[in-house]
Each structure stands twice: as C-alpha cells, then as structure tokens.
Length: 289
Image 1 (spheres, rainbow, N blue to C red):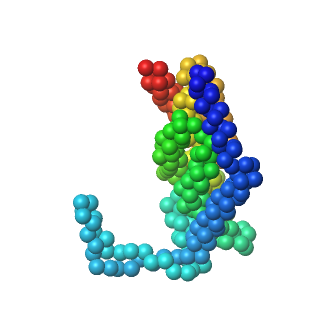
Image 2: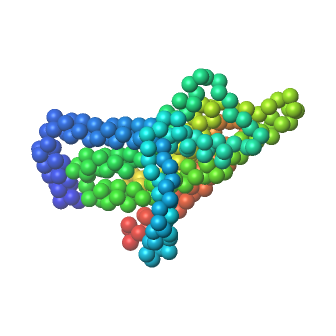
Image 3: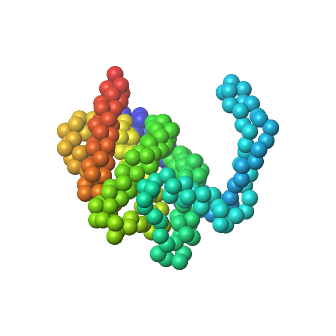
C-alpha cells in the first residue's frame, strides 16, 4: 500500500511539474476551441446543407452482399436542409394522423431547424468531445482510471442510443396518441393541434433526457469498480433507487398522460437500477477473486 501511495505521489508530482498551471490552461483553451469549431462546422452543415440521392452504377461490397446504387450528394440549401428533412421525418413518423402542426410564431420553422441542427451537431461532435476530454485528462489519470474510461465508452454510447430509441419508438408516439385520444373525447369542436416549436423541443428534449437517464447502470458499475460504493450498498438502498428513478421520470416527462409515461419511464429506470446492481456484484466478486 505504501509503495502504491508513493508511486501515486510521484505520478502527481511529475504530472504537475511537467506542465505548470498556465500550460494546462493553454491546452484546455486549445481543446475547447477545437470542440467549438467542430460544433460550429457541424451546426452550419446541418442548417445550410441539403442532399440529393444520385443514381450510380451498382457497387458491390464483398463479404456483405450489399449493392449500392444510390449515393447522397450534398449541396447548399437553406429551405431544404438536412435539419428541415429531419424535422419532416419526425413530423410524419411521430405525430398521429389526425394531429396538425401549427405555426404560432413567425420564426417557428427557423427555430425548429436551429434546434435540430444543434442536436445533430452535438451528436456528430460527441466523438471529438470525448477524444479531446480524454487527451486532456489522461496524463493525470492512473492506469485503473484509464482502463475504466476506455471500457465505458462503447457501453455509454449504446445506453444513450437505447434510451433515445426507446423514447422515439415507444414514449413519444404513446404521448401523442394519448393526447389525441383525450382531444377526441371532447368532441368534433376541438381539433388536435400542436405548435412546431413545442413539438420539436419536446421530442428532442425527451430523447436526450432519456438517453442520459439510461446511463444510470453504467454510473453505478463505475462507482463500484472504483471502490467508491459497495455493491451491497446498491442492494440495501434499492428502495431509494426506485424512488429516484420515479423522480427522474417525473422530471423528464411532459406530464400530459395522466401518469402513464411517468410510470413507464420509472419502471424502465428501476429495471436499469437492478441491472446495474446485479452487474456491480459481479464486478466486485471478480475483483476480489
């Protein structure tokens, strides 16, 4: 133990001796500029660029059995940009057939494109953001911390994608179907409508929030792996875990379905809590063996 403490002290000392605080700040500024530049370029690409499918001679991909006969060609476009096409995709795939989109503010279509472009830019730049963050933090991390960071990158992407997909395929259609059902129960005098800005912000906020919420088991496993929280602690406080899951569900849910969405999200997050608890026990057992 003493030798490990000495080695750790030497690593910290050498790290900070090699790079004074001013050099760390300069490096941080450089990496932040790269991230901002990536976000800006991605944002304007989605906001100001459209694409058109062009027919080509069929291209065979060996071993996969795939034939490509069309490729997308980007071109400058403001009115039919990628953000606009993504917006149309969500409108025609998420809204019930009897629900109409209305424009309340004159600039709602532009705001919707800005919102979608920003979301897509964040997704596109996420690998660079992780890379730059890793490059900045790695010199000051220990080997076991570097190992867990590398091991969690792919699961983090998969969990975020799963949460967003869960919201897209189940929660958002359920939410709009229930709203449409309640509206129809009021009679033909009431027509189901939703503003464009409200639709886009609600859809992407729910997808992003649920994607982040699905990271809960990974956080639990990481804390157990780093010996910060024992696996038995997750088991002893499982009631609090379920309570927190339903509180998170209440926070991220729009609250327009009479508790149905909150219940579905809460049960899903509670299941993820128990999954994280079970894997934490396996991690702890493997580490002690």
